Length: 142
Length: 142
DNA sequence: CTACATGCAAATGCTTTGCAACCTA
DNA sequence: TAGGTTGCAAAGCATTTGCATGTAG
Image 1 (spheres, rainbow over the protein chains, first blue to last red):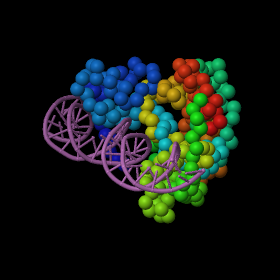
Image 2 (image 1 turned 90 degrees about the vertical axis):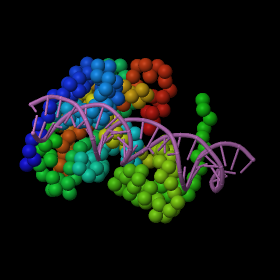
Image 3 (image 1 turned 120 degrees about the vertical axis):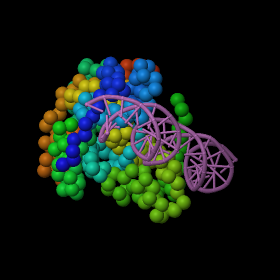
Image 4 (image 1 turned 135 degrees about the vertical axis):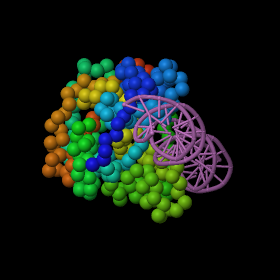
């Protein structure tokens, strides 16, 4: 197995963590960058990105990979969920019935007007599963 | 209200739709581009992007906005879901209990090794809700 | 000391856009 | 004929990376 990497606690890393913990609005890297910059004007965006990577790898913070701009297209316009291979990116339909009632749980519990939801499963396709046996366990603990 | 736009059926648009319907692997724009290029070597990637936009707007195809593009960070490392405003991008926690058993539905039904799932709610935050009353209805029919 | 980390700038990768020419209804 | 559409190239934008220098352990 690969030897363990030892991480250091640098002023930059500490500040990034501190500032993120002050923010309750699930900020992006740019917003964290701006916050840190007020206390350490010479930080670089690159440093912020690198540290956010490391900190989420260490489990100190969580990276939210929300759905975003265009990625994939589907000729099937019916509602259905997908499963994606974390290794190779393959996407297939997930044979799971639509959660038609899941949005009801939010009524009264949020101030948002709910429009819909997205559910996506993550895993390994058979090919990558074989190639990469220990990977699953690793990600499980994430 | 805005006057209705009339769309045309161009050879490019038709081919893009045809090729997408042949592909069962939820392709990205680049893959569709390559497929179309075999039959129409001078198409441009820009045309492919523009048509995928229009076709999904028309409901002829579905755009899968899978996780991975918008990166936000969260100091809270416990499992929880989020709700995102489709207008302004604000993200908040969604007060919904984790679907601990949802992945079980897939055992035996998929050849993938399941590692996890992501659930995200989409809606309008109170501020955008007010500004944009007809929007909700529009998106509902999507 | 030395491997990890930083600042800076350049390089990605994917998507969008401006524009002049083109073509569908 | 009008206004949507195309190819091309350039521009965007968020994120990553190469490199020389700096520094925590």
